[in-house]
Amino acid sequence: MSDAREIALDCLAAILRRGRRLEDALDDHPGYGRLEARDRAFARLLVATTLRRLGQIDRLIGHCLERPLPAKAGGVTDILRLGLAQLLFIGTPAHAAVDTTVTLAAKHEPAKFKPLVNAVMRRLAREGAGLLATQDAARLNTPDWLWRSWSKAYGEEKCHAIAEAHLIEPPLDITVKDEGGDWAARLDARRLPTSTLRRASARPGELPGFADGAWWVQDAAASLPVRLLGDVGGKTVIELCAAPGGKTAQLAAMGAEVIALDRSEARLERLKGNLARLDLEARLVLGDALSWRPDAPAAAILLDAPCTGTGTLRRHPDIARTKERGDVRRLAARQGELLLAAVAMLAPGGVLVYAVCSLEPEEAEMRVAALLEGGAPVRREAVESSEIGGLSQAVTEAGDLRTLPCHLADLGGMDGFYAARLRRSG
Image 1 (cartoon, rainbow, N blue to C red):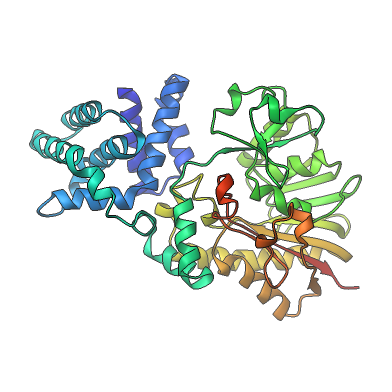
Image 2 (image 1 turned 180 degrees about the horizontal axis):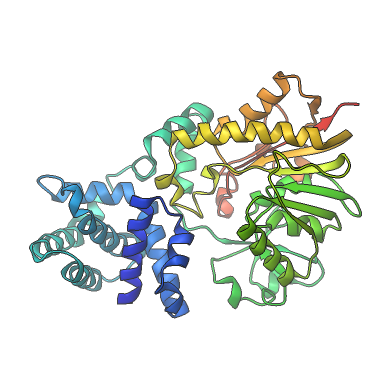
C-alpha cells in the first residue's frame, strides 16, 4: 500500500495545485497503472475521500496548530490530509494510519516536520472522532461560492441536503443494452424507478456482462435527457458534444441512427472504443458544433453541453476544488452559443433537448430563458413525470427536468442534471 499512498500524494498535489482532474491525475501517473487492482482502488479512494472531506480535514489540522503551515510546506499539509482521511473516514486502524503517514513524511519532507506530523496524527487519533461530531460536515466541505449559489437557487435547507449527498461514496449505476435477461439478479442490483440498475460500488470490469458489452456505467440522472426525445427508433439523431458517449450508446441501443459530434479527437477515440465494446454503431464526426452543420436540417438533436459538472460532485469531488465562479461565466457564454447553433440545425417541428450536469442556474435554466427571451424560433415542451420514471420532484414549475443529488436519497441519491425540451416553430 505504500506505493498507493505515494501515488495518492502526487495526485492530490496535481489536483489542488495544478487543477488536474482526479481521473487524469491518476491515469497519467506512471506508477498508477503498475499497481495491483486492489491498490489502484485504494489510491483512488484515498484521494477522492480526501477531496470530499477536505474542509473538515483542514479544520482539524488547523485545530492542532498554533499557526498555519507556510505555503512552501504544502507537501506536509497534503501528507496530513491523506493520513487523516484514512484515520477518520476510510477506517484504517489508527496505528497503521499514524505509522504510514509519519513514514511518508520522513521520506518526502525535511526531518523537522516528522515530529509535527506524528503529534498531529496521534492527537487526532485520540480526539478526532469527538471533534468531527461538532462539525457541520456539509457546510465545511462545500466551497463558499458553491454554497452561495445553491442556497440562492434552491434554498438553505435543500442546499444543505445537496451538500450532504456529496459526502457519500456513490453506488454503481448501470444501463443495460438489452432489457432481456435478468441482469438485476446477475449483477446483484436493484432496479430504480428510472429503470437504471443500481448496486454497491464495484470495479465494472470484474462484473458479469461488462466485457461482453451487455451494459455500461451511467448515473440514473444522466440517462434521463435522452428519454425526452421520445421514440427514436429508426430516426436520425444528432448528438452535439457527444463524448465520452453514454448517451450515444443509449440512443444507439434504442435504435436511433446517431450522428455523434465532438471537437476532441481523443474523446471521440474513447467513444469509439466504448461503442465497440457494446457492439453499437454511430457515425462519429470530429468538429466544433459552432461551425459544423448537417447535410439537412435535423428532426432531433441532443446538446449535452460542456459545463462545470457541479452536479457530479458525488463521483468527481475534484470539481469542487478545481472549478470557480469564473468558470461558470465562461462556460455559460459558450453554452449560449451552442444553443443558438443547435437551433440553426433544427428542422421545423424538430425537437432539441439541451442538457447539462451542472447545478448552476446560469448554465441551465438561465440559458434556456435567455434563448427564449432572445426570440429564438423554439418553444418549451414540458416534461411529464411519466417520461422519467414518475420522478415528479424532478420536474420544475416551468416544465424542465432538474434532478438534485438529494433526490432518491433513500436509494443512494443521483447526480444533479438539467434538461429542457424545445420544439422548433413552423
